[in-house]
Image 1 (cartoon, helix red, strand yellow):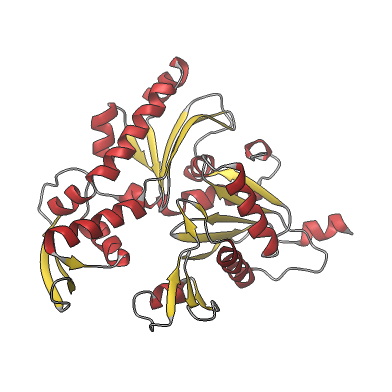
Image 2 (spheres, helix red, strand yellow):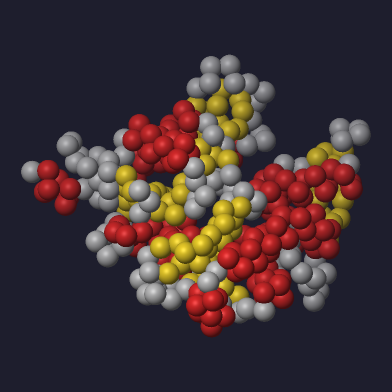
Length: 339
Protein backbone atom coordinates (compact mmCIF):
# COMPACT_ATOMS: atom_id res chain seq x y z
CA UNK A 1 0.00 0.00 0.00
CA UNK A 2 2.82 2.39 0.91
CA UNK A 3 4.56 1.76 -2.43
CA UNK A 4 1.30 2.30 -4.32
CA UNK A 5 0.65 5.61 -2.52
CA UNK A 6 4.23 6.68 -3.29
CA UNK A 7 3.52 6.00 -6.94
CA UNK A 8 0.24 7.96 -6.89
CA UNK A 9 1.63 10.96 -5.00
CA UNK A 10 2.98 13.87 -7.02
CA UNK A 11 6.68 14.38 -6.33
CA UNK A 12 7.76 18.00 -6.30
CA UNK A 13 10.80 20.25 -6.46
CA UNK A 14 11.26 23.65 -4.82
CA UNK A 15 13.65 26.49 -5.47
CA UNK A 16 13.41 28.25 -2.11
CA UNK A 17 15.03 31.52 -3.11
CA UNK A 18 15.69 34.74 -1.23
CA UNK A 19 13.68 36.73 -3.78
CA UNK A 20 11.29 34.14 -5.25
CA UNK A 21 10.05 30.63 -4.50
CA UNK A 22 9.26 28.30 -7.40
CA UNK A 23 7.60 24.89 -7.25
CA UNK A 24 7.72 22.16 -9.88
CA UNK A 25 5.29 19.21 -9.86
CA UNK A 26 6.38 16.00 -11.58
CA UNK A 27 4.55 15.61 -14.86
CA UNK A 28 3.20 19.17 -14.81
CA UNK A 29 6.25 21.46 -14.76
CA UNK A 30 6.56 24.77 -12.89
CA UNK A 31 3.21 25.45 -11.22
CA UNK A 32 4.13 28.27 -8.80
CA UNK A 33 6.44 31.28 -9.03
CA UNK A 34 5.88 33.83 -6.26
CA UNK A 35 7.93 36.33 -4.23
CA UNK A 36 9.41 34.92 -1.01
CA UNK A 37 7.62 37.56 1.01
CA UNK A 38 5.12 37.68 3.87
CA UNK A 39 3.06 40.57 5.29
CA UNK A 40 2.51 40.49 9.08
CA UNK A 41 0.40 42.38 11.60
CA UNK A 42 3.05 44.07 13.75
CA UNK A 43 0.87 43.90 16.88
CA UNK A 44 -0.23 40.26 16.74
CA UNK A 45 2.43 38.84 14.38
CA UNK A 46 -0.44 37.29 12.41
CA UNK A 47 0.24 36.59 8.72
CA UNK A 48 -1.91 38.81 6.49
CA UNK A 49 -0.57 37.96 3.03
CA UNK A 50 1.97 35.67 1.34
CA UNK A 51 3.77 35.77 -2.00
CA UNK A 52 2.36 38.03 -4.73
CA UNK A 53 -0.24 39.52 -2.38
CA UNK A 54 2.48 40.42 0.12
CA UNK A 55 4.66 42.03 -2.56
CA UNK A 56 1.74 44.13 -3.81
CA UNK A 57 1.29 45.43 -0.26
CA UNK A 58 5.00 46.14 0.29
CA UNK A 59 5.60 49.85 0.94
CA UNK A 60 1.88 50.60 0.63
CA UNK A 61 0.39 48.97 3.73
CA UNK A 62 -0.82 50.51 7.00
CA UNK A 63 1.40 51.47 9.93
CA UNK A 64 0.46 48.31 11.87
CA UNK A 65 1.72 45.94 9.17
CA UNK A 66 5.24 44.97 8.15
CA UNK A 67 6.71 43.21 5.13
CA UNK A 68 9.04 40.30 5.89
CA UNK A 69 11.36 38.25 3.74
CA UNK A 70 12.01 35.08 5.77
CA UNK A 71 15.09 34.13 3.74
CA UNK A 72 18.33 36.07 3.67
CA UNK A 73 21.49 35.28 1.73
CA UNK A 74 19.80 32.17 0.35
CA UNK A 75 18.98 30.60 3.74
CA UNK A 76 16.22 30.77 6.35
CA UNK A 77 16.63 33.48 9.00
CA UNK A 78 13.00 33.65 10.25
CA UNK A 79 12.03 30.04 10.87
CA UNK A 80 8.35 30.42 11.82
CA UNK A 81 7.53 32.80 8.97
CA UNK A 82 9.43 30.64 6.46
CA UNK A 83 7.52 27.54 7.62
CA UNK A 84 4.18 29.32 7.17
CA UNK A 85 5.22 30.58 3.74
CA UNK A 86 6.33 27.13 2.56
CA UNK A 87 3.12 25.56 3.88
CA UNK A 88 1.04 28.19 2.06
CA UNK A 89 2.85 27.66 -1.24
CA UNK A 90 2.64 23.86 -1.00
CA UNK A 91 -1.09 24.00 -0.23
CA UNK A 92 -1.63 26.06 -3.41
CA UNK A 93 -0.26 23.33 -5.65
CA UNK A 94 -0.77 20.03 -3.85
CA UNK A 95 -3.46 18.24 -1.84
CA UNK A 96 -1.72 15.54 0.13
CA UNK A 97 -3.28 12.08 0.10
CA UNK A 98 -3.68 10.36 3.49
CA UNK A 99 -0.60 8.22 4.23
CA UNK A 100 1.11 9.34 1.00
CA UNK A 101 4.81 10.28 1.08
CA UNK A 102 5.59 12.57 -1.86
CA UNK A 103 9.25 13.32 -2.44
CA UNK A 104 10.31 16.96 -2.26
CA UNK A 105 13.62 18.04 -3.84
CA UNK A 106 14.82 21.42 -2.50
CA UNK A 107 17.63 23.45 -4.09
CA UNK A 108 19.97 25.06 -1.53
CA UNK A 109 23.19 27.15 -1.76
CA UNK A 110 26.41 25.18 -2.21
CA UNK A 111 27.89 26.87 0.85
CA UNK A 112 25.02 26.00 3.18
CA UNK A 113 26.07 25.07 6.72
CA UNK A 114 24.77 22.06 8.65
CA UNK A 115 22.67 24.37 10.87
CA UNK A 116 21.17 26.14 7.85
CA UNK A 117 20.54 22.77 6.19
CA UNK A 118 18.68 21.53 9.28
CA UNK A 119 16.52 24.69 9.28
CA UNK A 120 15.43 24.06 5.68
CA UNK A 121 14.63 20.41 6.41
CA UNK A 122 12.68 21.17 9.59
CA UNK A 123 10.73 24.02 7.97
CA UNK A 124 9.73 21.81 5.02
CA UNK A 125 8.77 18.92 7.33
CA UNK A 126 6.66 21.19 9.54
CA UNK A 127 5.00 22.57 6.42
CA UNK A 128 3.83 19.03 5.57
CA UNK A 129 6.40 17.81 3.05
CA UNK A 130 7.18 14.09 2.76
CA UNK A 131 10.60 12.64 1.98
CA UNK A 132 13.14 15.44 1.54
CA UNK A 133 16.18 15.60 -0.71
CA UNK A 134 18.57 18.55 -0.99
CA UNK A 135 20.46 19.47 -4.14
CA UNK A 136 23.06 22.23 -4.49
CA UNK A 137 21.81 25.14 -6.58
CA UNK A 138 24.70 25.17 -9.10
CA UNK A 139 24.10 21.47 -9.80
CA UNK A 140 20.39 22.12 -10.32
CA UNK A 141 21.21 25.11 -12.55
CA UNK A 142 23.57 22.95 -14.65
CA UNK A 143 20.88 20.29 -15.09
CA UNK A 144 18.29 22.97 -15.93
CA UNK A 145 20.67 24.47 -18.50
CA UNK A 146 21.00 21.06 -20.16
CA UNK A 147 24.66 20.44 -19.37
CA UNK A 148 25.87 16.79 -19.36
CA UNK A 149 26.71 16.60 -15.65
CA UNK A 150 26.88 12.79 -15.81
CA UNK A 151 30.02 12.97 -17.97
CA UNK A 152 33.60 13.18 -16.58
CA UNK A 153 33.98 16.60 -18.20
CA UNK A 154 34.20 19.93 -16.38
CA UNK A 155 31.22 22.30 -16.71
CA UNK A 156 31.32 25.76 -15.14
CA UNK A 157 28.14 27.41 -13.87
CA UNK A 158 27.65 30.83 -12.30
CA UNK A 159 24.19 31.07 -10.72
CA UNK A 160 23.41 34.65 -9.57
CA UNK A 161 20.26 34.70 -7.49
CA UNK A 162 18.76 37.20 -5.08
CA UNK A 163 20.77 36.29 -1.99
CA UNK A 164 23.76 34.28 -3.20
CA UNK A 165 26.01 33.81 -6.20
CA UNK A 166 27.02 30.19 -6.71
CA UNK A 167 30.16 29.61 -8.78
CA UNK A 168 30.91 25.93 -9.41
CA UNK A 169 32.75 23.51 -11.65
CA UNK A 170 30.78 20.30 -12.05
CA UNK A 171 31.89 16.88 -13.27
CA UNK A 172 30.36 13.40 -13.00
CA UNK A 173 27.29 14.32 -10.86
CA UNK A 174 29.38 16.29 -8.34
CA UNK A 175 30.70 19.77 -7.60
CA UNK A 176 34.48 19.58 -8.05
CA UNK A 177 35.24 23.06 -6.71
CA UNK A 178 32.99 25.96 -5.87
CA UNK A 179 32.44 29.20 -4.04
CA UNK A 180 29.18 30.41 -2.50
CA UNK A 181 29.21 34.20 -2.35
CA UNK A 182 26.59 35.99 -0.29
CA UNK A 183 26.62 38.85 -2.77
CA UNK A 184 23.98 38.85 -5.51
CA UNK A 185 20.87 40.69 -6.69
CA UNK A 186 19.82 41.97 -3.26
CA UNK A 187 23.26 43.43 -2.64
CA UNK A 188 23.07 45.27 -5.97
CA UNK A 189 19.61 46.64 -5.08
CA UNK A 190 20.88 47.88 -1.72
CA UNK A 191 23.84 49.52 -3.48
CA UNK A 192 21.47 51.37 -5.83
CA UNK A 193 19.36 52.58 -2.89
CA UNK A 194 22.50 53.84 -1.15
CA UNK A 195 23.77 55.59 -4.31
CA UNK A 196 20.46 57.41 -4.89
CA UNK A 197 20.32 58.39 -1.23
CA UNK A 198 23.90 59.73 -1.23
CA UNK A 199 24.03 61.39 -4.65
CA UNK A 200 20.46 62.69 -4.93
CA UNK A 201 19.29 62.83 -1.28
CA UNK A 202 16.29 60.78 -2.27
CA UNK A 203 14.85 57.65 -0.71
CA UNK A 204 13.64 54.75 -2.83
CA UNK A 205 12.50 51.21 -2.01
CA UNK A 206 14.46 48.07 -2.87
CA UNK A 207 11.57 47.13 -5.18
CA UNK A 208 12.16 50.35 -7.13
CA UNK A 209 15.92 49.67 -7.13
CA UNK A 210 15.22 46.28 -8.73
CA UNK A 211 13.19 47.98 -11.48
CA UNK A 212 16.02 50.48 -12.09
CA UNK A 213 18.60 47.68 -12.29
CA UNK A 214 16.51 45.78 -14.84
CA UNK A 215 15.78 48.82 -17.02
CA UNK A 216 19.13 50.63 -17.16
CA UNK A 217 21.63 48.61 -15.12
CA UNK A 218 24.77 47.36 -16.87
CA UNK A 219 28.15 45.82 -16.06
CA UNK A 220 30.05 47.59 -18.88
CA UNK A 221 29.55 50.87 -20.79
CA UNK A 222 26.75 50.62 -23.34
CA UNK A 223 26.75 51.79 -26.96
CA UNK A 224 23.78 54.05 -26.23
CA UNK A 225 23.18 55.97 -23.00
CA UNK A 226 20.10 54.87 -21.10
CA UNK A 227 18.16 57.28 -18.89
CA UNK A 228 15.35 56.89 -16.40
CA UNK A 229 13.20 59.52 -14.69
CA UNK A 230 13.00 58.49 -11.07
CA UNK A 231 10.31 59.51 -8.60
CA UNK A 232 10.89 59.22 -4.88
CA UNK A 233 10.98 61.09 -1.57
CA UNK A 234 13.31 64.03 -0.88
CA UNK A 235 15.10 63.16 2.37
CA UNK A 236 15.58 66.81 3.37
CA UNK A 237 12.04 68.10 2.74
CA UNK A 238 10.09 64.79 2.90
CA UNK A 239 8.31 65.89 -0.28
CA UNK A 240 8.00 63.94 -3.57
CA UNK A 241 10.99 64.47 -5.86
CA UNK A 242 11.94 63.65 -9.46
CA UNK A 243 15.51 63.09 -10.73
CA UNK A 244 17.00 61.67 -13.92
CA UNK A 245 19.60 58.89 -13.65
CA UNK A 246 21.66 57.12 -16.32
CA UNK A 247 23.16 53.69 -16.89
CA UNK A 248 26.57 55.15 -15.89
CA UNK A 249 25.13 56.08 -12.48
CA UNK A 250 23.83 52.57 -11.87
CA UNK A 251 27.03 50.98 -13.17
CA UNK A 252 28.95 53.00 -10.59
CA UNK A 253 26.43 52.05 -7.89
CA UNK A 254 26.71 48.30 -8.47
CA UNK A 255 30.44 48.25 -9.25
CA UNK A 256 31.45 46.68 -5.94
CA UNK A 257 29.02 43.68 -5.98
CA UNK A 258 29.69 43.12 -9.69
CA UNK A 259 33.46 43.03 -9.15
CA UNK A 260 32.99 40.65 -6.21
CA UNK A 261 31.24 38.18 -8.53
CA UNK A 262 34.01 38.49 -11.14
CA UNK A 263 36.65 37.83 -8.47
CA UNK A 264 34.75 34.75 -7.24
CA UNK A 265 34.78 33.36 -10.78
CA UNK A 266 38.54 33.97 -11.00
CA UNK A 267 39.15 32.22 -7.67
CA UNK A 268 37.21 29.10 -8.67
CA UNK A 269 39.08 28.93 -11.98
CA UNK A 270 42.37 29.17 -10.07
CA UNK A 271 41.31 26.26 -7.82
CA UNK A 272 40.41 23.99 -10.75
CA UNK A 273 42.69 21.16 -11.84
CA UNK A 274 44.54 21.41 -15.19
CA UNK A 275 42.17 18.88 -16.79
CA UNK A 276 39.05 20.74 -15.61
CA UNK A 277 40.56 24.05 -16.72
CA UNK A 278 41.09 22.54 -20.16
CA UNK A 279 37.45 21.42 -20.32
CA UNK A 280 36.21 24.88 -19.32
CA UNK A 281 38.43 26.63 -21.85
CA UNK A 282 36.59 24.59 -24.47
CA UNK A 283 33.05 24.66 -23.01
CA UNK A 284 33.11 28.15 -21.53
CA UNK A 285 31.13 29.55 -18.60
CA UNK A 286 27.34 29.27 -18.26
CA UNK A 287 25.32 31.96 -16.46
CA UNK A 288 22.03 31.29 -14.68
CA UNK A 289 19.77 33.12 -12.22
CA UNK A 290 18.22 36.58 -12.46
CA UNK A 291 21.64 38.24 -12.26
CA UNK A 292 22.56 36.62 -15.58
CA UNK A 293 20.22 39.13 -17.25
CA UNK A 294 22.34 42.15 -16.24
CA UNK A 295 23.38 43.95 -19.43
CA UNK A 296 27.04 43.49 -20.31
CA UNK A 297 27.80 40.89 -17.64
CA UNK A 298 28.78 38.26 -20.21
CA UNK A 299 31.22 40.70 -21.81
CA UNK A 300 32.68 41.69 -18.43
CA UNK A 301 33.33 38.05 -17.48
CA UNK A 302 34.80 37.36 -20.92
CA UNK A 303 37.19 40.30 -20.50
CA UNK A 304 38.19 39.05 -17.04
CA UNK A 305 38.74 35.40 -17.97
CA UNK A 306 39.22 35.23 -21.73
CA UNK A 307 36.57 32.49 -21.84
CA UNK A 308 33.39 32.19 -23.85
CA UNK A 309 30.45 33.16 -21.60
CA UNK A 310 26.96 31.88 -22.40
CA UNK A 311 23.58 32.28 -20.75
CA UNK A 312 21.07 29.60 -19.88
CA UNK A 313 18.01 29.67 -22.15
CA UNK A 314 15.71 30.61 -19.24
CA UNK A 315 18.11 31.81 -16.52
CA UNK A 316 15.39 32.74 -14.01
CA UNK A 317 14.09 29.17 -14.01
CA UNK A 318 17.27 27.20 -14.57
CA UNK A 319 17.46 25.99 -10.94
CA UNK A 320 13.82 24.90 -10.66
CA UNK A 321 13.93 23.25 -14.09
CA UNK A 322 16.98 21.29 -12.98
CA UNK A 323 15.48 20.29 -9.63
CA UNK A 324 12.29 19.35 -11.48
CA UNK A 325 14.23 17.18 -13.94
CA UNK A 326 15.54 15.26 -10.94
CA UNK A 327 11.97 14.37 -9.90
CA UNK A 328 11.29 13.12 -13.44
CA UNK A 329 14.41 10.88 -13.52
CA UNK A 330 15.00 10.26 -9.84
CA UNK A 331 17.11 7.11 -10.18
CA UNK A 332 19.37 8.63 -12.83
CA UNK A 333 20.13 11.70 -10.69
CA UNK A 334 20.30 9.91 -7.34
CA UNK A 335 24.00 10.77 -6.91
CA UNK A 336 23.43 14.54 -6.86
CA UNK A 337 21.85 14.80 -3.40
CA UNK A 338 23.52 16.22 -0.31
CA UNK A 339 23.82 13.84 2.64
